[in-house]
Amino acid sequence: MELVVHSKSGQATDKKVLLDDSIFGIEPNDHAIYLDVKQYLANQRQGTHDSRERSDVTGSTRKIKRQKGTGTARAGDIKNPLFRGGGRVFGPHPRDYHFKLNKKVKRLARKSALTYKAKDNEIIVVEDFTLDAPKTQEFVSILKGFELDNKKTLWVLNKKDENFYLSSRNVQKAKVVGADSLNTYDLLNANKIIMFESSLETINELFAK
Image (cartoon, rainbow, N blue to C red; front, top):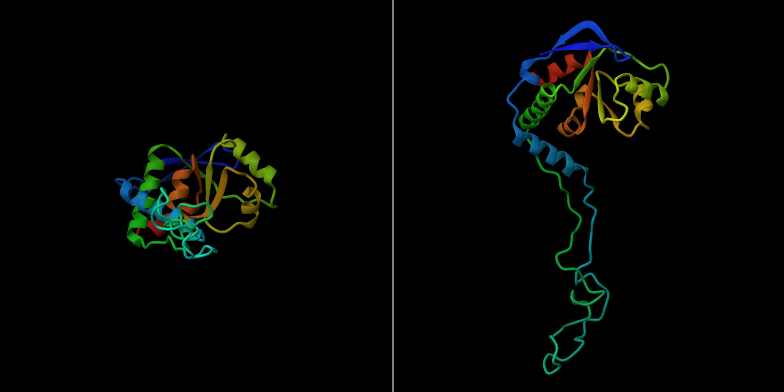
């Protein structure tokens, strides 16, 4: 698949780039995508939730009424989960939600996500450029040039650019990542993926293995 390279202002240039079919034109694997997104979301969870069960609640352990003859249900101590202020039954406790996923599955998932985006014409390639200073207004004007100021965008750079990152940080629907930090969730969550021309070389090196 061939894509036209755009300038910083959003205008099409005479240059074109060829997307590698082994990365942007494979048979997508939906289950690999599901597993990779599931792992990404699981890793975002802190797992610090906790609750007090019957043994953790402060209170007397004496039996609050006799077993029989009251006409009501039998009850033990005041920490019974059925009573107000009692312990919680099978409540959550701190845990780690992380699970292992093979590198080959992750690579397949990301190639599948890139294939979906390429098929839907949601990838834009731009010439490499830099920002002289961190200015959010300048970044927003660039988005407007591409008519993407109201859409979720994922900017893929070849190398770390502090000015570019700081300029985009306050823009709610924009995210900037390096080509070596792509993940399936970010790819699928964005309406448009804007790739620097040089970042395609890094993507080809990483995913063509």
